[in-house]
Image 1 (tube, rainbow, N blue to C red):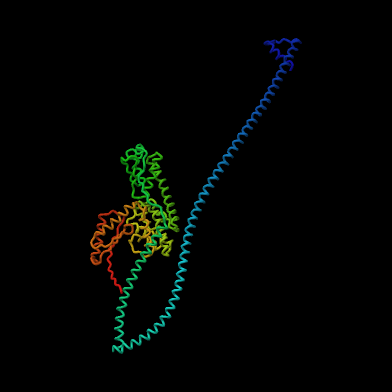
Image 2 (image 1 turned 120 degrees about the vertical axis):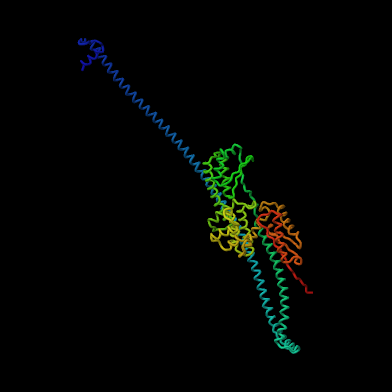
Length: 549
């Protein structure tokens, strides 16, 4: 090994040559040994230094990693705390929102319960007053029964005396007149029958007069009570069939290239769109009020969105149609709940909801039906009838107007067929079919619905007609009838749907009365503009009055 080291040293010092070697002297060997020792020491020191440096760098890297890990842990803790705080805030906000929603729902339920409690209190007060009235009447009846028994006893005694006197007089008359008993009886009965017939005629005339007066007074009282107890808001609504356009550029986008968008809109929604020179307005026209409402809302959404093309039109139209159908069901349920008419068929609820989009002379038909239901209940309660059944009749009386644009015939007949198919009661069917007098009333609820319908339509603010025009129309109707010869008095009733003409019986006979009714009806058709029809009734009455002095 030493020899190898020497050789290496010789090679390093350049003392060796190719193919020759020179032996080293002792000093050189010592020097070489010294160099080798230095080299080994330097090598060892270098290795040790490198090892120490590697250990030091490893520890520094570990410290840096530890610091980075601590920093990441701290960041993660901070982020977690922030997320926890945000989650707590979000949970608190959600809790407050749910608490507000619950309070609103609770408040609505509380208000509904208060309304029900008010109605129950009113009904209880009515029952108490009726009970007091019945108690008073019962006392009067007991007293009257006692008086009647007393009078019956007195009459029995008088009858015995009269019978005895009658037999005595009869024997005396037979003896004086010289007639047989049968002949005298026939003659007496003949005179008695004539007197009784005359007195009966007078009594019937008096009873009929009193009955008419009391009936008119009672009807007037019930009508006033119904109007006073139901204080409704004005129900007039205008049917909006125009859509505002913000600019002419938007109007051009609605029309589309060569009218492409308008044609797609009309084909998708089944309406007519009228675009004229009127600035800022597009008119939507359709005989179906629901379809017109869908088209109007669809066009408003398209204008607001700004993207108008056939595909978008179909998409928005379908969305709007679903929204309107949902709204129809909700409105039908709301009307049933508001009018307190439970147990309606699903089809009837849908038809009631459709009435929200239908107006009659400016009056919303759904609100009118609810109003008629309330009025029917009030009138029925005053008459001692079933208020629940009256409400049902009133709510459904105009149900045919929801589909009268789809089926031929008047809305009373259409409503009757729908209710009959859905197994409604006979009273409801008769009220629906006869509330305009088209069929004969077979239950007391039909005239109640007729009266409530007239009150709702005729009250000021009920329909789009000013009070001055309303009064002028009634005066014109009475004026046309008063122009004819033989007319004494005229009365326009039922909000101008009927005019009653009282004529002089000495100047107008039965045949002339029929002709007079036709002439007045013809003049009304020619000179007046009115909704529906006007009934002309000519009354010719002969009264015979005598006074006993």
